[in-house]
Length: 448
Ligand SMILES: Cc1ncc(COP(=O)(O)O)c(C=O)c1O
Image 1 (spheres, rainbow, N blue to C red):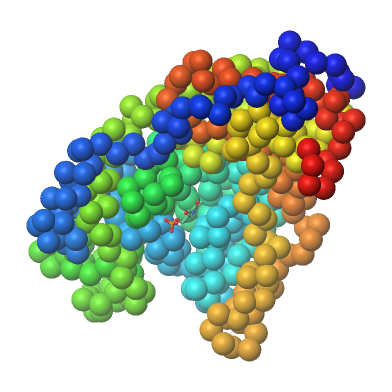
Image 2 (cartoon, rainbow, N blue to C red; image 1 turned 135 degrees about the vertical axis):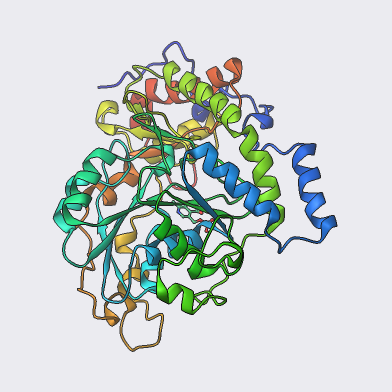
């Protein structure tokens, strides 16, 4: 049972003590993205040249991104959702098909399947990595499965060795959604290069933030060309059926319809974002190395504190990628069953507003995937194109449905400021050390 008396950390701010983090804390510690005069000059140059809709800067950005990540091909898009839609189509996802996708992710990892007339067979996630659980993929994969979407959730690389063992056995494509983990390493390989194809969001809040945009990467020329043909025309960075300057014919239907995007969508990125992307990418390895040290420092300070575990990969030659949406794992059983809401309330009172319970809500329960009739067919789109009905109700994915009580927000430090990080860590330590006091004074409506 946790102690009920004040420990070395002093009285909780919730009960009148001095907050661990003073109100005058350093905002620069969290400010992101870091924009310098170099970003400004690059963006202004595009505006002055009148080439926001051009592709010259975008091609440079694609080439640099591919080189940094170690992919053969990179194709920039207007956002990450577009990149995922194109990647799914490139992998052959169509009417009546299924994709497998973790239930805990942002909606764009899954929803484009419905636009293509397919459905989503949601899989559970692993409670430690928060990424798709390979065992649950095994339960769901079948003749209709065209792709597995693997999300490197909140910076954590997924369990690729086990995922590929299953995917290859069934001849199913693996699409990485690398929107949360740009620059992460899985056994020495950078995420975004591991799947058959990868899509990443580069929107303004991400770890690699370029304003608004997305990136598709692959080593597979055929998949690359299909992504070009879906949402781009007459503008590719490398040889392509859709690049008249250097045509290479590999798929007749793509050639025949050249000049019009087969997806009837326009996925071109605004070049102001490509310009900012080039500058951000050049600084990114240095900046995420600092984030890495800062986050590891924070977790080292909390080593051995009951109730808390880092959400962090513990594997040789593997790292978190940028620590986007930084989370911690909460173990109430080590704190006498203290509810996560009460724990977070105490940490917030210590001056840490980002300590909120939970993560993305479980998508398999969302009415969108059960009821939405997107195309006015008189029945839910999830079953209107001849798909198998794989909709799942409450109780079907136990980990995804309970994680909101076992995961909480932690500060996403951008600078390795020892003094400040020590204060933030103290806030969490105090709440854990005073779990007994918190248990004796449960949440009361409207009052601490
Ligand atoms: C995991 C994940 N996938 C896809 C997306 C979609 O990207 P975008 O917002 O750039 O369309 C996001 C977030 O924005 C995301 O978090």
